[in-house]
Amino acid sequence: MSDDDSQQERTGEQGTRASGPRVLVAGASIAGPALAHWLHRWGAEVTVVERAPELRPGGQAVDARGVAKEVIERMGLDATVRAVCTDTAGAHTVDADGQVLETFHAEDDGGDGFIADIEILRGDLSRVLYDDTRDDVEYVFGDRIAELTQDADGVDVVFASGDRRRFDLVVGADGPHSALRELVFGPHERFLRHLGHVLAFYSVPNEFGLDRWLLEYQDQGSGRSALLRPIQDATRAMTMFYFASADFDVDHLDVEAQKRLLRERMAGLGWLTPKILAHLDDTPDFYLDQVAQVVMDRWSSGRVGLLGDAAFSSSPMSGQGTGLALVGAYVLAGELAAAGWDPDAGFARYEARMRPFVEANQEIGRLNARSRDIPGPDAEPGPDFTGEWFMELVGRAINGIELPDYAGVPDSAAPAGSPIGSGSKSP
Image (cartoon, rainbow, N blue to C red; front, top):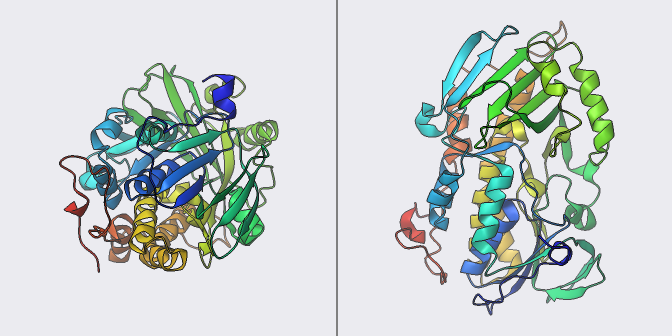
């Protein structure tokens, strides 16, 4: 991507521009481009603004399970997504000597188990969604919303670049540290719920002989774990670290401080940890942050709404962040269009449909975090995952929402063989 493209890329000039409402979406990872797909199909004119100069590559592996797979099919992207999946066969938990303790297969639970059959690096899924929408949607990279003022008829936006524009609706899909959420709803501290753990991941050379199998080592005494997973590029691998931290206070933008923290907390952890940490300074895609959820009483204010992690992050401990983003994008765009783009009605219906689904996934995230807490005499007993109650919760977290067909909404680009009405109808 050229410097000009990095500063501001405008696409959609060759495509058919919509004549409907003008919608600004903040964030070009997964939720934002997915929402742009559905907004365009249902008649909106969409602009996506992303503060990064270009799409961010790499990232952790993300999953699509249950109803999220149906959304991908309705987008007409099932084959494209599956073509860039990690192709992970399964996972082994191992001891410090590398001996296998437990095995999970990708086909377990119909492909919706611990290893999902649709598992893809975050950056690869972001690229698929961007490529799908770039001819019909305006993307602006290297910019962000600096100021926002709304009235009964629209939203006036001032960008950091100095550009000023007016939109009918604005949606924040810019992650758990959403700048738009802070601008409209208040400080992050009001909504972020730290679950007492920290996660880090980055790519390393595949000098460990990985071949389609994920390996995870957990130290039960300290609550720490190290994980290696294969990716499509067989010469590389992705590593992840978890550790308990009740007092996480490192700036999520201070990478050097994060690396120091990771080295300190992983000191003395066995298995392959020293060899993995040896690549910490030369990796191109290091990421570390607290394991946190976003909990809000409402996801909209007037003509501004929130989607994905910005609204209802369930944390990586749920394994469903991407599913919530994809399903939420479909429902939000559909409800707005079905309401004639009235924000009060559209946002209200979106929240009513999504909240039970979100709450089930957030409960899964909290339970999984508790299961990794450091054991001790005063520690709360870990959850019992063997009961029927847990399987019922998992069912609600994976398939606990019916996808409306939005039959009354004109669809400008339904993919052949994948009509919107192929799923379950909902009143």
